[in-house]
Length: 186
Length: 186
Image 1 (cartoon, rainbow over the protein chains, first blue to last red):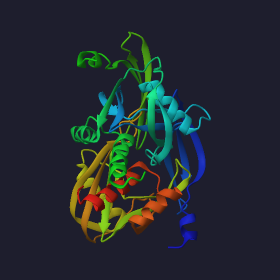
Image 2: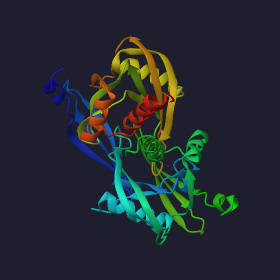
Image 3: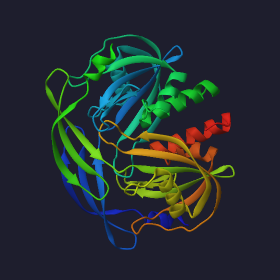
Image 4: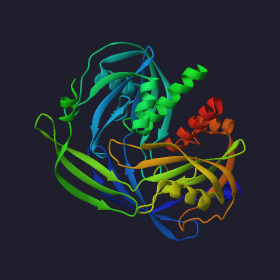
């Protein structure tokens, strides 16, 4: 199939209906034109994006355990938080690491970046590898309650097996960590 | 910190406001009780969940390229689709693989499962490893336009570098594929 044919599959917006503007996300429904001339709707969540950190302290990674209301359960995740307006993701990663765990990183390197759910949301998540950790200042948001821990790769794999680690960024960070240990590359 | 203390960090729902019921997602805002007795709101997207397939054809994986309206761009992803009501994810994976690519798998094994964005959504995504592919019947949804391709691991890594592959499930599947090739384990 030609690139030209693919290009014609862009979904032109006919109209946008704003449904909700929240603290964290907003929701709109777009009516679009299909390649065959028909119409369809697309439900779209807008999110400011987020940054997360695979922070290594010797042979352990820092994790935080917190209650996740959408899942109605506690989850163990790598430190993360949403971007402030116009914030560089690497700055956000360093900030969230220190706020949530009390550690500052002397080195932050890009590890991965991905859209969490491109079918209905524009959220992009940036993951950094943090090394050279030293004690900084913990500082949680007012409605944030979490427990910090440092776990080995074996523990992380066991937590994935048990479902205590089960979010995209943390599962991906654990895979990346395994690859890093096997190959020496990030 | 004790497990008892952690347990007290559950966020009890005080009230739920239903904002939107769509074709794919719904949105609610919960008012919750914080551990200190204060209140906060949580914006929650409900999604039926989805299944995706790392489908290997010799040393290539099947991918589909399609327009993603929330991102306003074309993306290359592994075949995937949302669960029908009460559908077993492995059945969904096999169905979506055949509908989107025209291939049927003689073997489907669980590779990973994760919540895409536990901060604001309950979407869970199940990934399966499909091997032993044979020709079946392609059958796209009415508003679905996509191009099928089979790419090597090197191409997949290059597409990640270029941002043509950039969604959580596909990036994770590529990491898993690399680990599978290195270790022989899934």
